[in-house]
Length: 331
Image 1 (cartoon, helix red, strand yellow):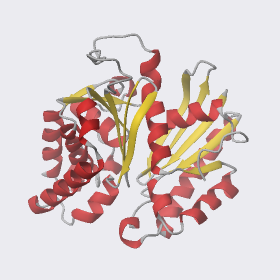
Image 2: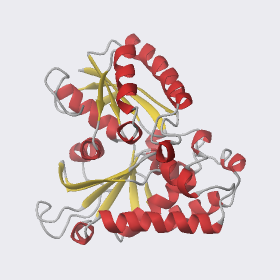
Image 3: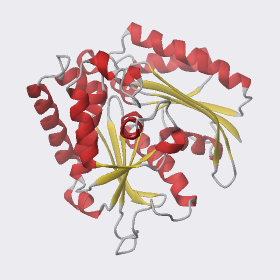
């Protein structure tokens, strides 16, 4: 079944057009991502700004043209942290629905986490074991969930813990690259005191949001979305970006910290020139790298696996198996 999924996030708006088989294989036809900063100022004002809405609508118009050319059978937009947090989020979702004919779903944090886990684990469930796969757990996965999926977005970070396709714990934390950048970073490059305050804020949220028992059960982690894929691309100095070399890449925690420190010492203009980093992510990547490093630390791990399979994959899989007239995932 040919489907189109759009993720309207706090920092970026992304499109996936894919053929989804009856066995759950996703074959990408089109995948695009543009930084639209829909959540700009939401943390302080509580509203989506007119200029942010205009940027996002312009990208959606381009995506709609691509969708029409590919003859999809079902199309959906999932809206996440910025829209669910904003007082005018419902009005924006209605505008997207009426203007572009999309089945729009404003996801709760729990729903966002569930779709992210589904997407991240989809390829792993079918892939043969290889050198990149984590070691088998000492006890059955049903008793000791060992994989944490980390999705660092613009407004929130979703963390899901489970094994295979079964999530056993999930949470949505108010840790996003746009939110944390606006809250703590006021200089370019940031001051040491600003980075310390950001780091302490992240640690506090993680400590309060992740139960000790869940942390102890984790044996490996998969990180998805822009911060993680940027980290993998920067570590390999990929120019141009190569999804095949990012998917499944393992990056050490010490490399995440080193890359973050290097980026934090640069002005934004210099960060825009870093191989592997999309220029539009330069304003928020420092916060992203810091959040990623702290998440890996929270689980006591030395590295994290990076995956291109994220909420877009989860949305596409769910759309193919439960069409709009049947499914009622969100509002």
